[in-house]
Length: 198
Image 1: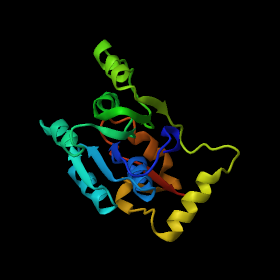
Image 2: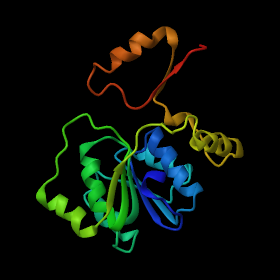
Image 3: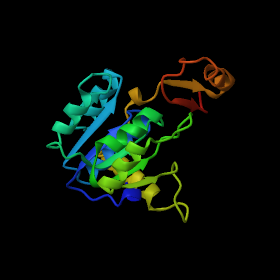
Image 4: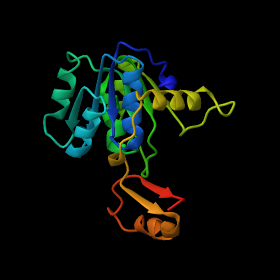
């Protein structure tokens, strides 16, 4: 959130409901967002996001999803947009969802080449939104205040972990098998947690 100069009292769009998206959504709520809307293609993940505090969830496979998304902002767009899926489609979607002068942050790492059309780039110019990126959990000097904040908000219960945020938990003894799953297209449906004590 800090990468966009985030301030509470504004609308927030979260693209992607993996663990990073779920946690980004919760941070936005903790720090006072007026409305947080999450976007994904899996209804169960959208429901989990609402259980964890999102104000609304929109399935982007619906034909009219953009109209629904914009209606939730009075058709002005979102003040902050966080792309957490690392998908080139959602990265372009972020440009559409952004309000004038919005903060847009790409957190997800794309696996394909990404390019923007002249029209898409003109959208950025005309809206004058700020586009930035965020790299994992880096903070300097290490450990930065972010680590303290995470520990504090987990301890207070405001930041929540739900086991449904993880696709599979595997023991360290099955690590090679878990890596092999990535070679099968479509096999891995989310984050894999390696349990070193199992």
